[in-house]
Image (cartoon, rainbow, N blue to C red):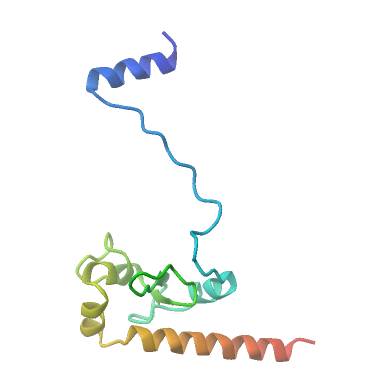
Length: 128
């Protein structure tokens, strides 16, 4: 019996089925607005809550696709449910997160966008 046959036999004994793994998407989902330079800049920003190293969190409006310009830097415990379900935006939801930490997500998004534009403009002016 070859390796695949043995694996199939064991799977049959335990009542398991093979699962076809879908390949990763090579293009963004339809409607997604991509800005790689902004995401790279945002990834370099400290967490807006704790000031520590952060990951980038996309803030979506109901029914909208992800837009890279609608992101905020959040430390893992404020971002992902597996690191902090009672403290994360994914665990609490937007309204409870804003109330708990005293932040305005929409205003913060605007401030980060304005800051990015100012910094990029300053860089362009300083280039020879």
